[in-house]
Length: 181
Length: 223
Image 1 (cartoon, chains in turn blue, purple):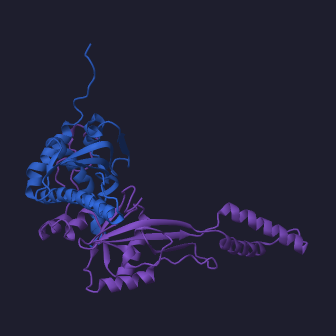
Image 2 (cartoon, rainbow over the protein chains, first blue to last red):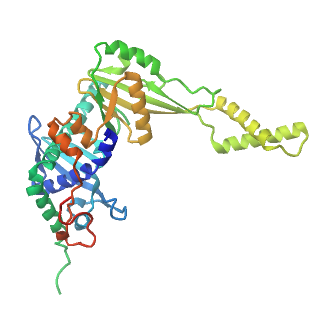
Image 3 (cartoon, one colour):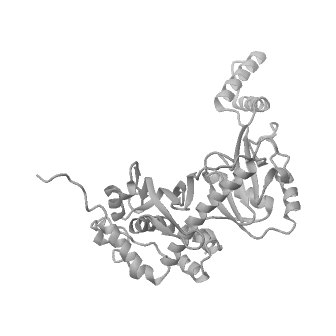
C-alpha cells in the first residue's frame, strides 16, 4: 500500500482524535498533561463545532455560539454515530492562550490566534510568531501521540473504548424540559 | 496574511531528507533559477508561479539577506494571472468585427474570421492589462525540518509542494496523523506505526446509545 493510500485509509484517526479530546476534556475538566518540558495545560472546545459522518446521509451539523461541546444537540449527534469534523479549540498554558480551528481530516489548524507578540523588529516578530506556532504544534502533537499509542494498545479495547462508548451513550439524556405540571 | 503579520491559517509539512552540507550555495543557485518570472503577454500562458521576497512581491532578486531569518528560510510563492476578463474581450472583439466588416464592406464574418479577430484582440488586450498578483508565505524551520505554507487551498498547496521539491531537491510530506507517526514527528515506536496501518474505525456509538436504528457500524464493537 503506498503512502497516499495509507493516509486516506487512516483519515478516520482525525475525527476519532477530536472525539477522544472531547471525552478526555470533560473527564479531566480540560486539563491535559503532555509530559516532558511542556507540562500541564488546559484545552477547551470553544464556540464552534461541526459534527458529521459520511455514512449518515452525508449530513453535517454545525453548532455555533455558547458552548456546543456541552450542548444536548451535539451529544445526541455523537449518539447517532457522528464525530467532530471541525472544532474550534482553545489552549491555555501558564498565562498564554491559543485559539484555533482544527479540521479533523488532516488535523490542520486554521484561524490560529497566538498569544500577543511583543517584538517589533521583523526578524524578532517572525521568530516569536514561529516559536508560538511551534509550541501549539508541540502541544497538539503530544496529545496526538498519547491518543495513537493508546489507540493501538490493548487498553483501548478493554478500558478506554468502553468508557468512551458509555460517555457517548449518556450524552443528551438530561434534556431540560421545564417544570413538571 | 503571512509569516510576519496577519492571520494564521496554514498547512504543515515535514521535509523528507537531510539538508546537504553545501545547502547555502545550492539554495542560492536554485532560487535564482526558480525565482518568479512574469507572464509573457505575447505567449498564451495565463499563469506564472515562482518565488519572491516575503517582504515585497516585486522583489525577485533573492539572496540570503532576504530569505534567511535566523533558523528560518522564508519565501513567498508569487502567482500572477494574466487573463483578459470575458465581458471585456467580448466587447472589444465585437468592436473589431464591426470595424472589419465596415472596412471590407461586408454584412457578416464567418466563424473562422471571428476566431482570428478574437485571438488578435486577446493578444492586444494582454499587452495593455496588468496581471493580478497573489503571494503566499512559506516558512521553513531548517533545524526542525518543518515547513508551513500560509494557505489551505488544495490546488495551491499542490503547486507549492511541486515547486518546493523542484527548487530544493528535497521531498515534502503532508502532516497527517499517520505521517506524523510514520516519519518520526511523534517519536512513536515502529510497532505503533505498523499497527496504525491496520487499524479500523472505532464505533463510538453503540446500540446502548439508544438510537439503535440509526447507529452505523458494528453494534458489538468488534470492528
